[in-house]
Image (cartoon, rainbow, N blue to C red; front, side, top):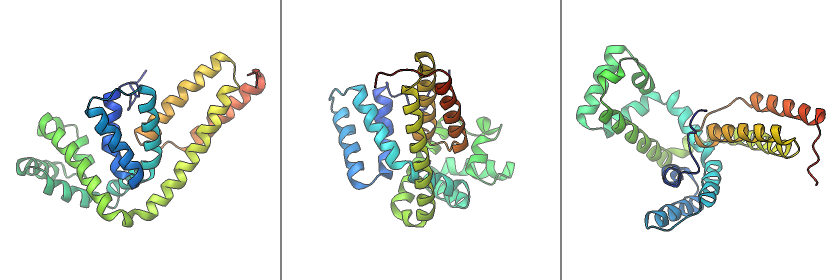
Length: 228
């Protein structure tokens, strides 16, 4: 089985998630996440279940913003992201990026980093630098120019509502299934939530609808008395 993007049983990784993505949240949510991160760093013991709940709440709160900025920099804003990253990187790293991009005639940073020869052109140290600079560039852009992404943000807010509705339906279905199917569906739910909420992947809603249709049929074939 593939490793999850965010292992919610790993307190350190969950704290990293809170620290990285809280910048996209509203003030109240951001301050709550920052408080938890600070307390953890000061040595406060925290239950994994509590941290998982905080990560889940933050993931829901920031998904539209994360996805809007990812969409913008992947499409119409790709050149703007490129220039911002060059400006924020060390001169030597920026020089390597420009030379390599010119050599392969790439149109975006993703094409540069995803090229088969990028491992030869960029050392691990430089790739890590670019990754961190990219995170900061996106954080700064969101704080300064979030209004320019409002249309995208609203679109992805509606997309998120579609996910939440379907994930809730699947969870309710799981509770009504026989134990074997219940375990199967809960495992799928965990994987879907990891891909969508934590990794930020856009999974077609039709995939969730197909799962709902399948498990609705299974429930009708083998009804399970939950005692409710």
